[in-house]
Image (cartoon, rainbow, N blue to C red; front, side):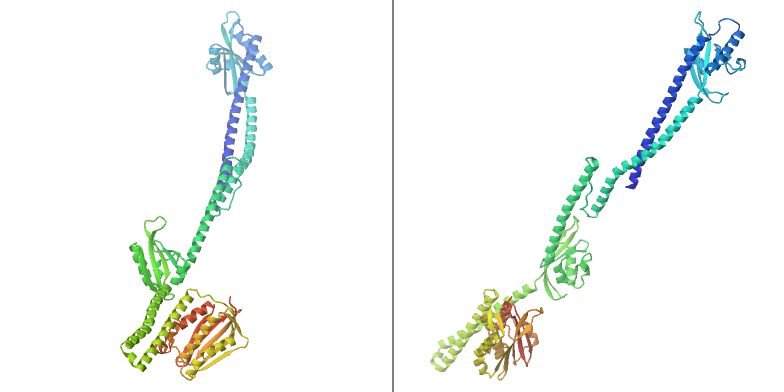
Length: 599
């Protein structure tokens, strides 16, 4: 903007300078012409006075006339201070105040003489060869008093040195004034240019900041002129852009928040294969960060060969694809993948949008549901088949044998009880899983509560000569649902009795432990036995429905395979955790941790 300001200042100075110079030249030329014209008129009047005071002689010889005219010329020179020359009509000089007429050339061809002969008066300006300065010559024709015939020409000559000196002084004053005016014009022009360019500088600076997406800048609006209008328009544009940018940022923030909180992974791939979008869930599912993926080719996802191949195929043949792939990094997952070709940024070529969904849990639940239906069908079919088979046998004639009939009826009764327990456990588990089972929390005296559980199972333990050992601190209370907690403890203790050989031990111990957060306290109830133990491969599935480690022993003990699943769900309803530790042939222990006070 400094260059523009200097250019504008120079333009103003040049324009003013040329204007003043032209005016000075015009004024000087006009002054010179007017002065010369006034001087010419004055000299014409002087010539008429001279002719009236000393008229051209009518009589006498040529020599006498020349002598008379020479004397008059010299006398008038002394009076007026101007050179006087008397010229005959044929151009011969008859008298001159400065020179001897005999020595002077014929003046017929002189410009002022020619004009005087033609119109009565004449004038010219030329340089005098004798005085070496410009002279103004004025001539008039004189006529005879008797017959009005032209007798000759009287010429006055006056030096223009004084006039030229005056003009030179005027030109010097004009030049000095011009320089002074240039200086004043330069200062004024610079101030004017500054007043014009300063708002433009502010606007330029504001425009540059707007180009850098700083739309909060505003410029002073000034007056009502065009610059002020431009400033107001620039501020209005800045405000509009600021509002639009804020809206875009809010939309971008909302979109980024949506993408980051989606439970599906979203990956966007440009037509050239570069990854342009990679949300947080995609990081989790594919095991790489946004920084590692965005801006790079999809082919660099080397951990997922099948996925890269699928993307390559869709890029080559852009049609929507829906697949399920198993990935093994960062962990084994089953991913449901939707790949949709999409146009990006108006490009003719199509990029891809990938939506990744972890369906491992869904498929596991579907498998569990299928297995549950199959297990329920199998578990229900077994006692029903037994009841039906023995009933048919009795109807076929076994009723006639009292001992056989009694044995079959006992089996039918046992299978009916087992079927009743199975149906009861299924209904109970369904109620717990659907959250339709409301818990009623109340303080429970654990020593009394665990003692009562031990008494209920004492007869069953005594049949196998199993010792029930309950250890707990006196005065230990726990906030829980008493009935549901009884179900948990009863299931764990019954499992211990069922899977412990005769003469073994089932131990229940309750104690206070510090929670994982280091602040709250939990109650840890450990139920351990000296039974057959659980193989390591069965440990992850021990809490699944209908899963049995020893199916033969479970059936013989009357178990339904749902007890530990019920225990796990009831524990979670109490905001607690349960885990198992076991060694084959040594025994198992189930470790139950519940909050001392329910949240």
